[in-house]
Image (cartoon, rainbow, N blue to C red; front, side, top):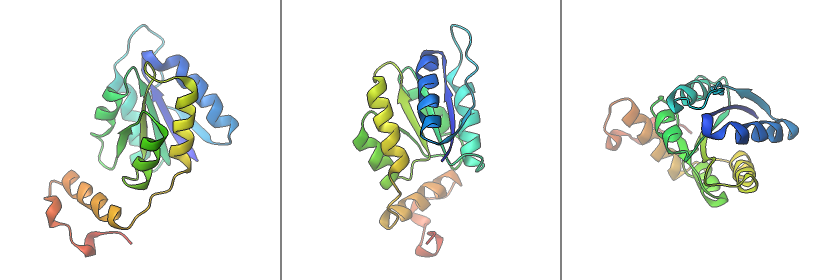
Length: 160
């Protein structure tokens, strides 16, 4: 899988371990928004290039880390086509893929240990989107991004 990765200053050490693990597992990893060599950097500056790479199809998925994961999630979700999910366990990782087809995974570097982070990432990568009724819901999210009422979505608007 081609994965774009980004982190702010609170997650510099964790993201380096994640990159090594992903590459060792055979994934193509692109570090974007990992230019925090100072004591502080702004998470939107780190989230944007990862979200854009996923939205533009340059990466199949993105992983973002900051202290809590909240800021990264908020920033990434501002990019049309992004469904960023803040996840704290394997169940959340599976559900966000099965039901929401989350294309960006957001994690907390401060609240999660490395082992659980790796388990969450593995669950997120290996879980497929279920489609079905969930496809209708994603079509409604796309409608909202386009400034339309979600209730305006009909069956013809839903990808097969």
